[in-house]
Length: 555
Image (cartoon, rainbow, N blue to C red; front, side, top):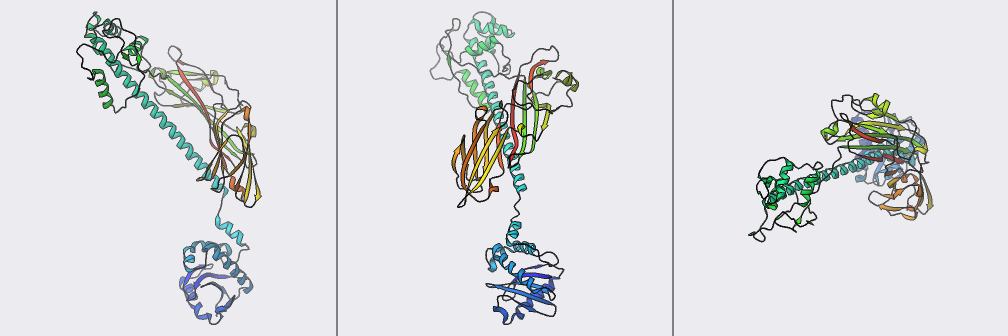
């Protein structure tokens, strides 16, 4: 059997669709289709019929106001041609959603694809059923769904990270605003201390190392400089200066002052706020003790906040990539970690980090591969676990995080995966599915915070939850059920969720996405000390740890 062309045309011979399976010129196929209505004659009302010419055979079937037409050679098997025509007559209304002229024109490309599923190049028929053709037309790919889920997971992770960075930037801006406002308050307090005529202004100027008339008891000019905003450095103010800032009065009641008139300090503060585009920060006022040397006692004093910054900030972070099968087996499991150092001062930049034994009690896998930064002295790290630059004359970059150590680990051992899932979708009848999901945490000493297990439902209808350990939330827009636990530890190392939802396809409930956060790492990197290079003096530092999944997918 050789089919030259398959076409759909009107009773007047207007071709709506034509698919050629052999090499034919456009002029020839248009001539064959134009000759077909003239050859119909009285055979128009037959259910299945054919017309033969000297060169080709027309096998056709009327479908409402249209004709489904096969053009074959005369040597073709008429029985197979009729079977092919019958299959195509079922495909056309299924794909086009009807057999009207508008429907066929609107779905012409889909019909061409369907014709290609039935007939191969050369005009030979494929042994396929209508259901197989529908499956091939849908082109549903589990791998594509998985790739899209991974992509979406990475996009969500990037959005979360951007939100955290934006929050950190806003925190730094607020700290900077407090610092500037604190410096302005300190300057105003110093100025009014000098005007008060007491010894306080002179004493403060004497400690500050600035000459003037303030050192003389009762002098009113030397202390007028006070503490300027440029000389105020948060985190470096000594105890004497801090005490003066805390007790410095913001306004002085003097003879002849008009009630309601703005003070010089408030005017200066308002100008600074307006100049730097800042907003006023509400502070708690405290009643200062009665002054024995100042002219006014019992007035309210506003303590300036002093923000403490650690010179060295260390961040230990691990990311997990885990792909598990529907049966709970591990397809891929990988852990990537890094130790990042940020120096906030020039002095702290010239330092070294001494690592110690891990203090955590979690599972420590065998086979962790550690790598140091190329600029870090690897011999020092291998021999004494010390992270220091090769060139000791240079320090770490200031104000910029630098990765000094990284590590990786991969395995297919199920016991190394933090959380395993077992999902059982079962058909309950009447278009309902019963789903039972159980989680199991591996490692008795592990703690997972903010655990979210996102299950696709394949429908926007809310599920009927029969039992749940924890809480759940239904997202009709994303067609998902989110199973949430605030904390998973040894007290609730396993849990279950059971619900009923409309559906018939067990594959609609995969892939499942898992997210959580933990401070218990696989490589429990501990820091013993951070010391300077020149005098080996200890350098204050902060250390934070986090373990989060980059991609954790089941199914």
